[in-house]
Image (cartoon, rainbow, N blue to C red):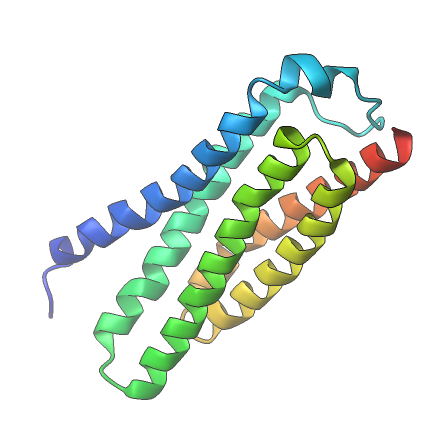
Amino acid sequence: MKNPTHSFPKLIVSIISCQLAGIIGSFFTISSIPTWYATLSKPFFSPPNWLFGPVWIMLYFLMGISLYLVWIRDQKSKKSDKSTLTSKAITWFVIQLVLNSIWSILFFGLRSPILAFIEIALLWIAIIFTIKAFCNVSKTASLLLVPYLAWVSFAAMLNLAIVLLN
């Protein structure tokens, strides 16, 4: 059995890479919250602004753990079939993580809720494909992405409501 500490750097890289996606998005978000975003009409179900940060930090943490579980599964199996499944799963994960960061750029950076809504629909689809691909490698990893899918579903409804109200 391998020493679990050999996997610790992969855990750190997995978590930090997900948190970096949030940090990239925050560059576009933070300055827009008290200015442009404050002027938008929002639906009754819009949560308070302070809630978004803690929720995303937790979601990125869960995403990082999920990525880690898939990444280490590859080193446990030398079978090429498993390695192919892992590569496909990680590819989907990277796609959805990039789309995740792009949403903040479109919504807050370009101040385009309509483009952001189109993009979040693509993000939602990519998350579904990621969950499916992760399930083929690690059921636990796929389940850790369910809260993320739920929050992005809620964010998509909020995004659409902002498009319709403004």
